[in-house]
Image (cartoon, rainbow, N blue to C red; front, side, top):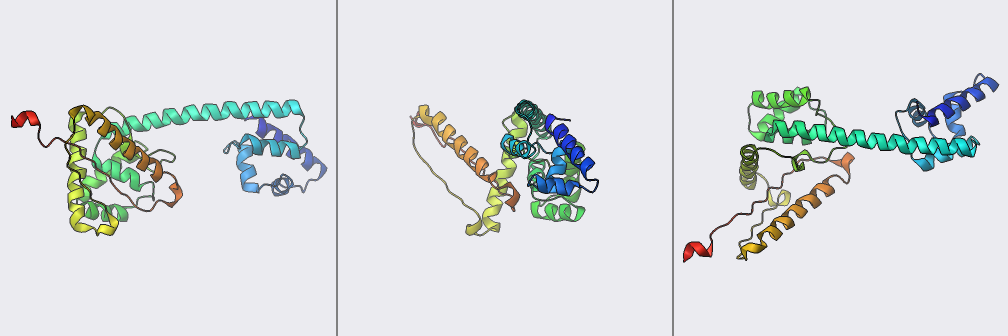
Length: 250
């Protein structure tokens, strides 16, 4: 139990001793917050910001020493939680990399939109043109790894972790194939296809790669701005490759 929880429980009990009918709802009203939020803070399920914690302590007329102790403990808790999230994210990354299949990536993104049901899995198998068995196998693997419906993780398909070249090529081939099929399936208002053929000094190719990487990263950040409003899954597949070299023509 953190220091803030201890103080809130102590002060609540003091008020209850004065009035046995004094409820948690009344305590929340006194602190100018809602009962549900206060209950979660007391149980340690929600860690408030330092400014909000300070407001609560001031309304309870808590001494400066105790205030400082609470604020210090909140900083330590948040630091610990941050490390836990980093470790959790790393574990998730390792599991996704180990699975390394395009179906996993799509299912993981769809799980950010909704809890998947057997009926929805059936619909997804038709949309992706794969067998129900193959999709169920991919889903069962993710469920076994406890990866479904994870919150606060960036797009799984952008994770920069080591995977075998063979598996990476398989994933990229599949998404490029889907890009070609999408040209015949979706109206131009729902997709974007662009191409550029250019001559360039070979020494500038690393710079072009960096431009593409930054573009991908910008899209990834944008996709996570309003996480609660996500409603569709898109894929961007960028391919930079040589057409010919002047050395081959001499």
